[in-house]
Structures are given as structure tokens and as C-alpha cells.
Length: 235
Image 1 (cartoon, rainbow, N blue to C red):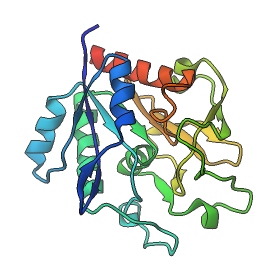
Image 2: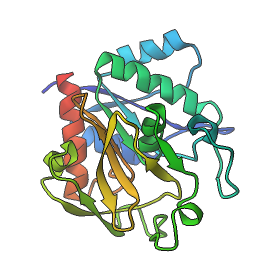
Image 3: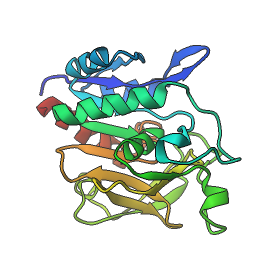
Image 4: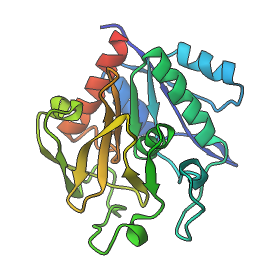
């Protein structure tokens, strides 16, 4: 297998672009060559970025601008990253057009769903209900804090080979309704959507947890990156 080029989006702030090293560790660990995708506004340059990579990884980060799913800001909405949403939605558009594999992680799973027309909880604790479990763990990234159920017959199930796994959890927003083009492939015990995927594309998967954070210690996390890198190598 050749080493596929994996483009990774970054956190964007007034301090510049940044990305935890765990992303490159997981990608390289499965034979992929990670490259940073710097935000640009010119659509022809965004398309050129997609042309230059074999797979797109949408990383985690801050909250998503609610205007993109038809809402005003909720009082519990956190910080946003101006310009990032539009940039990543264009990356997704061009990656889908080109048939490039996409892996969305946490925020990445959310922006994938929003770009496709899905909706979100701006704050699960105030909008989802009192039965909501703790999804923003205080433990380290490789600690697996709660169970999720994986739907049989989905790509995620084929990757993991299990219908129940434990994951880490670092979010207060979540996908509320999946876009028509996406299928919910995993849920937490409280009903929060934990994964969405496309049945129309070879590999388009968004997971609400951080498999890169638990990659070195967790076999399920390794399986996700292994499948993604394999799909990118074959694209």
C-alpha cells in the first residue's frame, strides 16, 4: 500500500493555526502522510488543496456558527472560529465531488452533518434533557468514559466488528438530526448521536469522539484510522 496524503484541518484563532500532535501520530501510525490544510478563501485554491490529497480529516475544535443550520446563537454556545465553517464546508463539497474519503472527528462530524443539511444541539445539557450523561470528560484523552451502541449493517460496524464500544468524550454540542444523505451509525445511551456516515460514498464517516486521542491504547480507535487510511490509499 502506498502512503496516502491525508489533509488535516486545524484549529483557527488569533494566535494562528494549531493542531494536536495526536492527529499526525494516528495517521502516521497507519501509514498515512499527514499534511496541514491552511484555511484559504479562494475556492479554486480550496479545490486545489483537495486535488493534492488522498483523504480529508476534519479535526475537532470550537463551536459551529448556528446560522449555518438556521438558528440564532443559544446562550450556552461557546467560542466559534470565524471563517473555519465556510472553509471546511467547501473542503467537504469538493472532497465529495472528487470521491475522496472523509473522516470527521468531534467538530468534524458536526460540520460534515451541517454541510449536508443536518441540524445540531448548540448545547446538549440545556437542549437535550436531564437524562444527558456527561460528554465533556475531565479525564485525559485516552480514558474511555462511556459506552456507545453501533448499528449493525453500517460501515462503522464493519470497521469495528462490534455493536458496543467505549469512547472518550469532549463536547457540549452534538448532531441533533442527521442530514438526509447521512445515516446515524452509533448513539450514546442517552440518545446523543455519536456517529454518522454516508451510504452513497466509499468512506465518509463522522465520529463524535476523539479516536486520535485514544489511538495508542485502544483497538477500536486504531481500526477507524486503519480503515480510513486504507480507503485513502485506494482512492
